[in-house]
Each structure stands twice: as structure tokens, then as C-alpha cells.
Length: 98
Image (cartoon, rainbow, N blue to C red; front, side, top):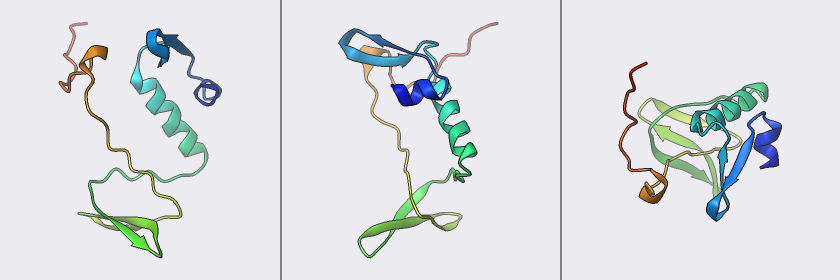
């Protein structure tokens, strides 16, 4: 929690010790992480990974439709299963009239 708050994202704890941004916007977490990665000069690749490049027992990069990418560190963000009890149902959010 301290990490995200240090990035400027105030948090709240709800029942079951679940932690969320005070804004209730997941985008605030994503934006804070992207901003921090930019500050650290980390290059972000948004690709569909076909396979990992494993050498000497370590992940050295990824194979994608657009080629191979090698890196000192690889982080794969895959998403997760929906959890209906929290309002997650895999459907895209509805557009609201403004």
C-alpha cells in the first residue's frame, strides 16, 4: 500500500481487507505504474506473446507476431478471471451518457 501511495494513489481498505484506490478507478493504478516506469526509462511493449525465450533456465525475452524482444527483465501482465461478487463479470463497462 505504501508503494502505491508513494506514487500518489490514495488507497482505502474495504471489507475483507480488500484494497482499492479511493477514486475506485483501476486506471489510477495503471497510470501511476506507467508514469513510474517512464521515470525509470523502462520500455513498455504491448504485444501478444506467443512464447517466452528461455536461456540458461531464465526468461530472457519474448516471441511475438512482430518479432523477438530481449530484456534484462520481463514482466507479463495477463489479466485474471472475473470475480462476480466484486462486480467483475468480464463484460466491458457500459458507456454512460454525460
